[in-house]
Amino acid sequence: MIVIVITASRDGRIHTVTLRCVGFGLLKNPMFVFMTLVLFSGLRLASPEPVEKLLTILGAAATPGAPFAINASLAGTSAERPTVANGLTFCKLVLYPRAVSIFAIWVFPFEPFAIIVVISSAALPVAGNVLILAQYYAVAPTRASTAILL
Image (cartoon, rainbow, N blue to C red; front, top):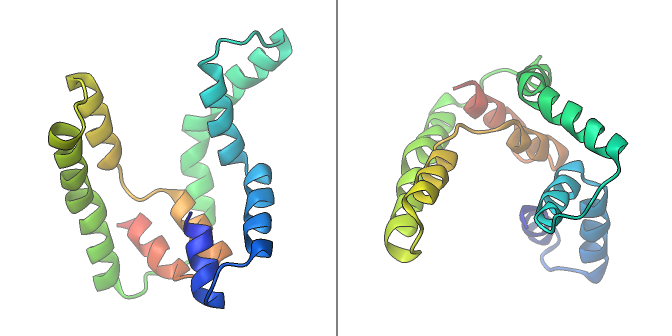
């Protein structure tokens, strides 16, 4: 969605070429493919044993590998406009979890465990995917890296 918003703001409107480009980009995006596979995993379809082993290995490597990937992408960046980054960090770590908690508790009738999971997820710090998108679309990548550093 953010890709469409950025492209539309640059061009002034949304073209069918843009939608087609975004669609093909999603199909090539590993994060989107993974989320789609996770959704289909709920169907309990049988998968070949080599695929299961590969996914188990990748899943085990994701948590320790993520900090290295984020730090590698931050190498060579500098902190720019820390007041803006402080504001972004405050919004992400304080305001966003509060808004999510209001919706999770009063708007949507979640179970108590689901409420804890949703609010905890909302309270996580800014992730590396924000920096990747900021760098790719050239939209304040140094501010994004500063927000991650904070």
